[in-house]
Amino acid sequence: MLRQMPEAPAIYKSRNVKNGGTMNRNVSTLGFWASFAGAVLFIVFTICFAGIALTQESALWTDLNTYLVSAQTNSQIFKQIAQFCILAFTPLYLIILQSLKALNSSKKLFSEISISFGIVFATLVSLNYFLQLTAVRFAIDKNLIDGLEQWIMFNPNSIILSINMLGFSFFFGLSSLFIAPAVDGKGIQKALSVLFSINGILCLSGGIGFVIENLFLVNLTINIGMGGIVTAITILLAIYFKRLSTQESRSIMAP
Image (cartoon, rainbow, N blue to C red; front, side, top):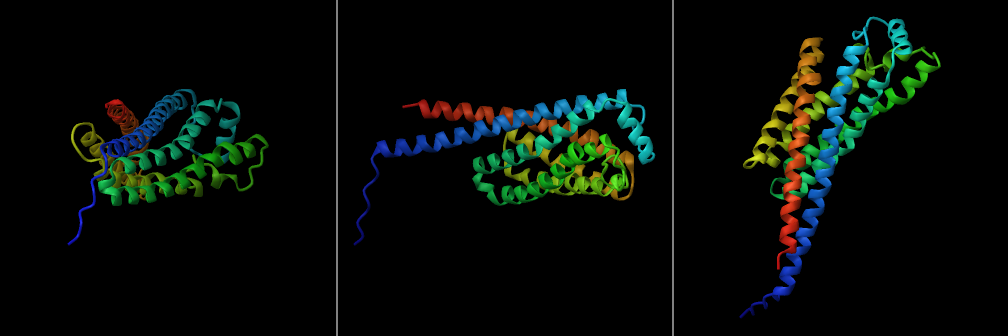
């Protein structure tokens, strides 16, 4: 006859609960700061995007020479800050996904798929914006224009824009769609799930617009729609993680 193992003393149970609570609090705190920083970056990006539209006459690409004249005569500060904001957002997005995965382990599969797509998104998009801030800027400053046209993201026919749109439309869209069920619940979680789903649909629609060369659809879904939705998502995520962190702190302090 099998003997029943003695139950662990209450002090060890309490210690295990508190250790788990401490880990969850750390995850929530990390998720909060990543979300808060992401929200700030997207708000600054939106301000810079408006600044570019208001201060630069040649918003549409015509040819390389016209773009170079505009880049050399107009201040590029808004453009460079906006590019830096997106570059900085990509690692924060992965931190957010990992935090959501750690706090919603019951739907781990959806989180892992989302993270896989998110890694590709972060790689493609960060590659583009780092090139814009470094190699492209260096070439323009030194007037090294041979072959430069294909690496300027504002050229609608450039290779680098296609790479960037692949990241934003396809992989960011799929990542958003798969993280949506992982955060589904009540209240703020339900709102996050809906917003992630909308963002995924917008991103994929923007990809379709890019393929069929419909600039209006791309601007509506990616530049306006995605920008607004991601700002709302990061703000809600910051609130969500902050609430969880506060709850975990209270549970740890409880006797």
